[in-house]
Image (tube, rainbow, N blue to C red; front, side):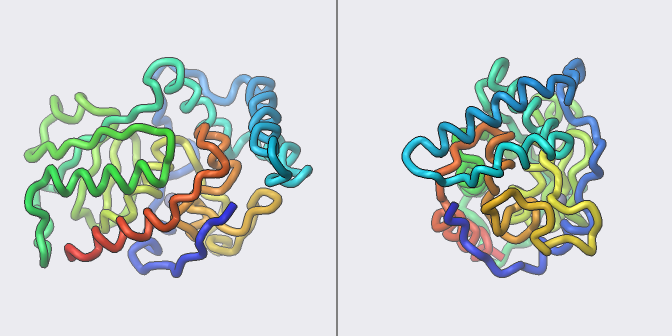
Length: 247
Ligand SMILES: [Zn+2]
């Protein structure tokens, strides 16, 4: 995979310390997670074969590694399968400003609608084949929150995903925190192992969930049913620059 090596930006560092814990329940309430290993293994084998149809893009050791790391990817896999069956891989996000304190942009978007379009583009290039509907909701209310799969609070003091809420210190960290909401975990288990390339799949050198890339690596893509070949590194860098230009 041609994942662009990217310099780590300071605002993402805060996600290293503040991201979600591993055992959070953020699934549709009735869904039993990580209970059907056979389905996961068969899907991993199929993903490997489909990805290698034209040429060997994933190493032969890939399926076994993915099976050995069932505990790390089963939640995202099961949530994705649920979405495929019930929601057509679409996610709805309601956007708020934390404590209703707007960000004082140097160069504001002409409207919140334009602002939301950029956030939507960031997510749809990061999670190709998924459809995101992002709505700016203004003043917070329980009714507005319940109208979406999850709520996002801009202008928070940390980057944090918890339950069905994402708090963002910097909105460019949105994709990483949404990946947690979709069930993905870090590749590392302890903070000292972050960005060290520990526990990456065979053939992998970096990943959004190792905080070393803005794109997802192959097992993360498998779990979220994202084709292995799609490379939107250029588009993601452009949209990130566009978002940053407003600060
Ligand atoms: Zn994280």
